[in-house]
Length: 327
Image 1 (cartoon, rainbow, N blue to C red):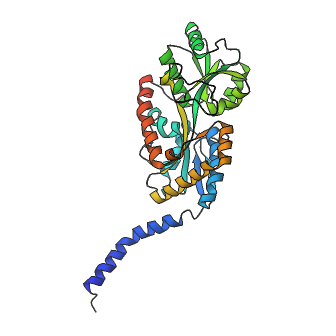
Image 2: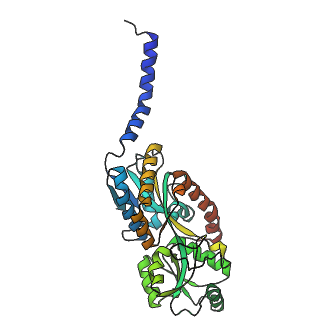
């Protein structure tokens, strides 16, 4: 018995639609098991602390636990590489920073493309760069510090613990015509201890790292790198206010997934992150740590993609112009 042509065509169309239907059903069932969040830095650092706060807030909306996997090395590029190689099924995501998803693209020869091999999920929080100094530093203001550095070339020591900080410091030297010795640190905690003890003269760092010492009055502070004053420390002027807009820089932290992760899944993850950041208790805890959450409209995947590309267009040429290399 022959199958009527109309029935045959219907059957063929149904078979062709199966893969799409399967993907839709798969996305609707997501997540069906725990999710891995790669943190591309060792446990205990600023990124790890934020990740642990986020997983607690996201597990409720997602209905599944999120397991943190710390993979440090090469300024975060090892952990980000692990994410790039993961299956794009929503069960591996990465909480990274501007260094790992922008700046490393200019510093390193990477086996992945920071701009094209990932799906942006959500921008989370930001924290401006701050310039601080030992309590006994002679200069009382940024202009006095610049004058002192010019009068004492290569006599001051500046602590740095991240590529992004090294970039800001190099930009500062170029804009102010100053020279000083860079002292690299692997951990921010060691840098803070040496600055409080007066073992180094000054440091660029994140407000997140230095806010407790600033509030305790343990060292001097000259300025912050945000476009506007930080709500967490509104008494500190911006570099732009003091005539150095080229030093404007704020660290940001964000979630990414491997390229090809379905949009429905990206949407669920982004919504869970936004719900977590909207929690008043979460915002209070972030403020204690020196973080500011992005406004809701800037937490979308599209807004994060735009931020990532804008920072690459701004900073990649500067990194190459200054000839900066990983240390």
